[in-house]
Length: 462
Length: 86
Image (cartoon, rainbow over all chains, first blue to last red; front, side):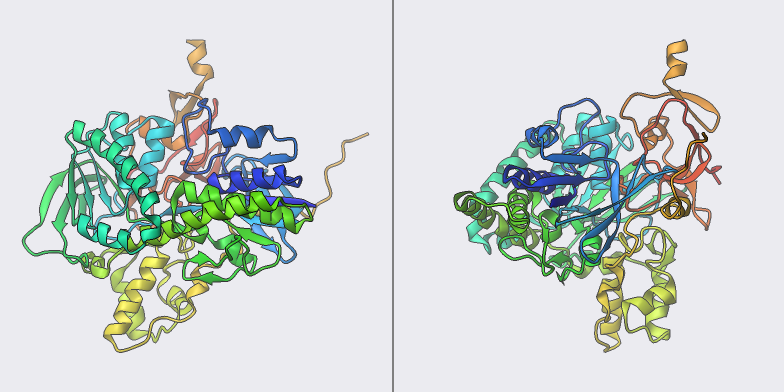
């Protein structure tokens, strides 16, 4: 009876530990070589967080690194592919999970604007990972822009590797942040913690004379073969550009992020119900599918501390599912921690929401789908002229979401823009919105490796 | 000198030393390259998402195409090939 945990970030590591400490056998699967997820990315050779050590040393936990789940079948059967990233000759294997904990995390959300596809423009997360693990800045002069508390630690990481960061731009203003935050008073204590962290980053930024500009965004990026400058503008409360406020800044890199998109494709494949973008779970992290549990960013964007608390609960629930006795005291303590943490996701979303004024930054020539290079004019033509009523027909009409990333980067934005166009035309929002969330092959697999699944193993000659 | 060659890769034929933990993207960015792929429309692309979901950064490693540079660790002896800048 094996508990399989997919994802070795804060949620997955704590789930594995909780299940193993309750006596279950646990297998942890993660695509990276080192455990820790995105949150604990660090230079080679540097020790990870204490929970990582405890997981790696635990006698009942097996960690499969460099391993991705490419398919989830009924009965919690997982198909795995192992090996260096995108290397041929990958090792293919299958595991039947008695209980499945999904902790697959999230990736940056970026909004499209003219020039965002230029080399030198990258996500906030990419900039931070580059700084932390490769000890590199993406350019000499790096602007940080978008919205959310993540921008400050990204700027700090860039300063740490010697980049010149002229400014951090946040589209949301401080009053809106405060107003959003106090709508969730139960999390004020957690909020105080966050404020403390941000104050620490703010001190670093002040020391390096990094300007912090609220209610400001990058509305265009310029350059020929790479970024050389951006246009910034001040915004109103809905993120519409205020006339007469455009300024140009010379930079050779731009780190952008407006929050995070949960990676829910495995949950969708397993049949879990979603509410909007997120996996629906009970107070005990149980999904709508028996034996499947979810924790961390896929249940709501709330950061590492909440993810860890949810992971512990999910691990206990998974251990109970496979018949291990769970101490009521331990479960109650875990539930208490999560209750404090859970409002955090709602508070974050209320404090730093994406406002629709960004639609106005987009021109007909702005690329919406980076993979297939589909611009807004093509999306508009599909919506106006080709009787597109659902996400699937939108994909097939203008190719948005058909490329390598399968709509991960463009999907949310394309649907929002299409819905706005349809509203202008007096039509209802697009149907079939889950059409971009389902990805039957969750990670690329080479045909040769798939074919090898059905061949007998090579025999050595006598 | 033999030491350096042992911990090196080639990028479009040029020998480049590598350290443990360096990704192929890290090697390219360290050389000052901001792009190494051309899209179907001939536009340059390099690193974007950094975690393997955008597929902008793919290039050829040891003759195998479509390798994500942001995820792939650079191993000594790797032969890395990029698109010609257009």
